[in-house]
Image (tube, rainbow, N blue to C red; front, side):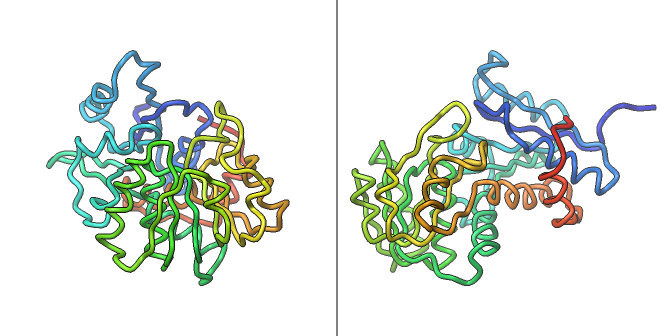
Length: 283
């Protein structure tokens, strides 16, 4: 009996040993009676650069790959992006390999909007401070535009990245008030929503990007980090009475949307959510 998978997928990124994406796609495969193999492809561990790992996946039978930190912007040079909104985002986290070449998508963008609505319903985001304007930050910012955010404060250790994002956002949300800050505590004053889109707080990168005292008066907080789910940033936000939206929700919905691109098959979201929360690592 053949042991070859029905669907071969992968994740290209650094520091992804704790990623639950292999489990998510394995579980959805089981829902569809498919054998899914989902590999972690870590360029430094493979002794290759990103370009070589991407070419390896394209040439070796992968249906597609997810792409995570720090390669979501780098991969754009290797793919065709048909969706104008994703082109404006300037970051790709899902690639499909086809006969006409690799095509790029961004399920962080769509996944963030789905995650926000699942937790906050129709509530408007208000004035939002977002720390970190890299790949996931760009996707979240465009998601905020789609949710009707009227004022967005951006902060990044590399101000030129924040400036580039502001310029890109103006092309799709010309009426949004966008400002760039250097002091996170000052930027948080009067903000409704607080967002971390940096790696600070994830496994291997401890800490928080914003002092707890600066959270007072805000209504909600989102952390793109999901390993661990309960980051210091979210713990302190919850202690200050904010509604919290964990990176796990973004992880879940970006995975759901990626599966539809990879396989084009249905899935049971409630069952998948339950199984992810109760099943140990099986891959």
